[in-house]
Length: 467
Ligand code: AMP
Ligand code: ZN
Image (cartoon, rainbow, N blue to C red):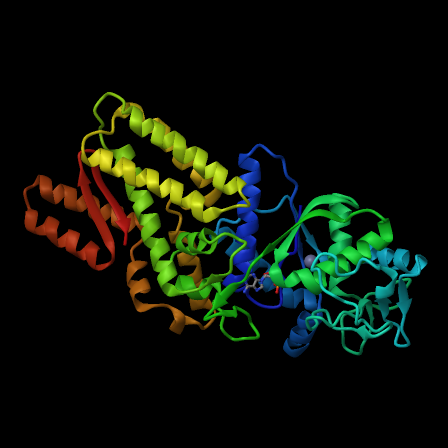
């Protein structure tokens, strides 16, 4: 499968990451179902916006984009989005793009304009519009557009190759000096790694038209074969009913939210819990809800594994675990219904918590429930607490880039203690208790609590977590 990746002209916002997260859900579900996958994602590292911004910064585009490419991978990792098998950078595939333009020209579907740019002739592909099912009957033959992203419903001959303009990054080629258009990048890289026909092509809903229509037109005109057999378009993340977008100024980056004290796992859960087919309205309440949900899961798992359970089995609970597992897979199998999949697991957690309260959960039930949690986590990946590192990295990034003001004060307090410092305070407290110096022990507990560290005494010793 091929997924349109980021355009690396700036830090990605969480709308962009919602799309990549939903594709990650698809990828993980396919793997869980035993389907081998090869997932290609491109990085658009040359386009109108990159050239404009790099020019303003007085940098070659490669130097300008390097920072955003590494930020993209860091953010992907923080959100636990698995790396595609193949990442493909546009600037590393220029000769193949040129070859595709030449192939289209030979087929009579590409022509050179007076300024040396090359355009795709829309009239060469009568099926144009079949993906977005747009009525394009009003297209005027020969009208052209040379920007990568253009207005809805204005289908035009679009640029395949843009002639060199003064000061722009360009490549010498048999079709003249210039640079590729955005659409030809994806057609070329998809076919390079996956062949002329492949199973699935994904991206955000805004890409359906014109980007994906243009990819289909270019590819199918050149090969006379179906390009992608299936398409997945992730609906938008909205803010107050409007698309989250750089241009609207209504966006948050992952880093913005981490610095406000939200955890990477909660952001992941909030962005995937509403299925990809539905738009999702971003709210801070939504993040708080996700934080609590994860807390409930982790507490339940700790309770299940940390406590000695009486020997025996509860058949009703085991069948609840089976049902939850089946419902989970069935929901995801039903067009990736993450909401129902998640609900099935939380229902099991509720039932098992109740059983535990009533002494009706036995040691023989533990493995069946843990197996369900494991399967859930193969897709959702929020159970293990790995939240500290992304937050620390975001803080270090803010501190090293003059963004200290964005760091929530409570977060600085919360992160001021390292894990080692916490462990050593806990050891000191245990020692104090042994010596019956309860005042000192309480003092340490309170000091930790002020820094957001919560202690739980159990038979197995002291467990701690950050609030
Ligand atoms: P870009 O970096 O602008 O090329 O976008 C990367 C991906 O994010 C594309 O698949 C877009 O369709 C997607 N995208 C952009 N804005 C949003 C949004 N508000 N919600 C969901 N996906 C988005
Ligand atoms: Zn693309």
